[in-house]
Length: 222
Image (cartoon, rainbow, N blue to C red; front, side, top):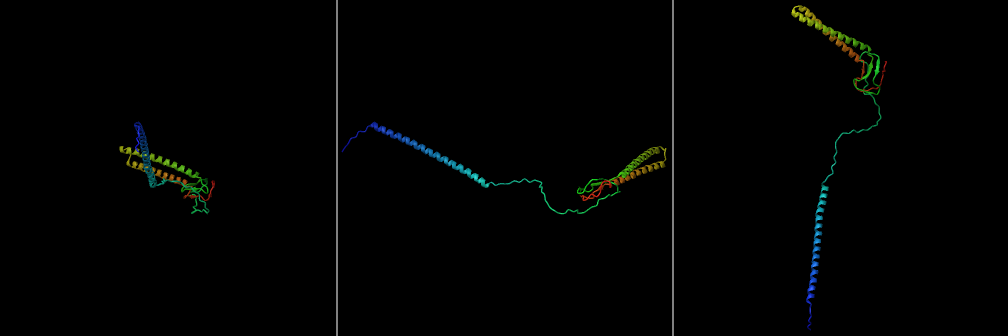
């Protein structure tokens, strides 16, 4: 059987327009979806590359780094105390006495248990007599020196007169001998003074060596 259908041209055009609009919207949606997927993939790839690289570098640096301990050398004092029991005895006992003339003790400068050095004065002996002797001998030195100066002055005057013929050569020789004797007496007097001073200094009781004073057997007045 044959049928004839009449199709409205405007309806066909409208239907075609609707189909075209829907297709365009679907195309744009697909484009946005694809673009979003591409962006997400790019972000994930960038994060993976940079994140793994930094973590790998950090782990590599951690594996390669070593801990080094630095110590600065120096000096310090370590104090401690050691307790022990025993007997203390002197290695050598050295008696101490007066090397010169004896006399009365005026001062004792150390006590038992004191540590002393060699040559340190331990006690002093009265030296009143020795002091007077030293003073007397010092005066003799001054007298001898004055005589020597006078003899030198007389000789100088004689030498001036002998050039002018007012004094003989024999007188000059006599004055020269007098000057020499006066100078010698000065030397003798000074030597005697030094001896007296040394004897006075020996009245001090000194330590013959460094060590510990064990006993004090002398007191002032003895």
